[in-house]
Length: 137
Image 1 (cartoon, rainbow, N blue to C red):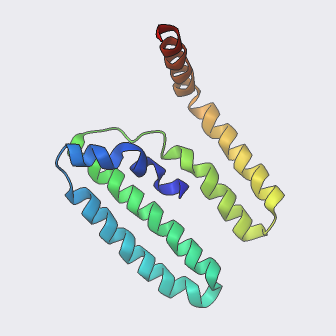
Image 2: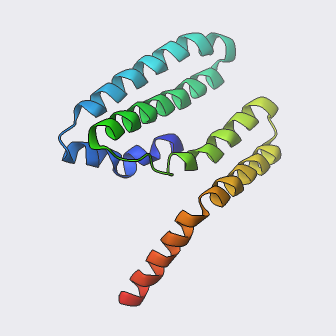
């Protein structure tokens, strides 16, 4: 899932490296409780869509708890990769509300543009880093 991607890409390894494995435990506990609670609330009303939304909320809560606990224990800034999830969430939410895939794709693209525009300095730094790596190889 896109929402849990920052955890999978390195924050989990970082927490284990710094011997703060309790972070994984607490984020998993809160994620599981969120999933159970929202399944109870959403499945009767929305059926299978409710189950899917409960799972999305579970990933979001797990990621948020993980990021906050890691930030407090390792004194790390929250990465822009968490903000990069916003287009996927916005597209999914707009599809849920409108059932129109083209409108949802357009909303996802528009949100992506604003995220890229907001973090354009990070993209410039990334492109410079890749360019320098390519020259040195």
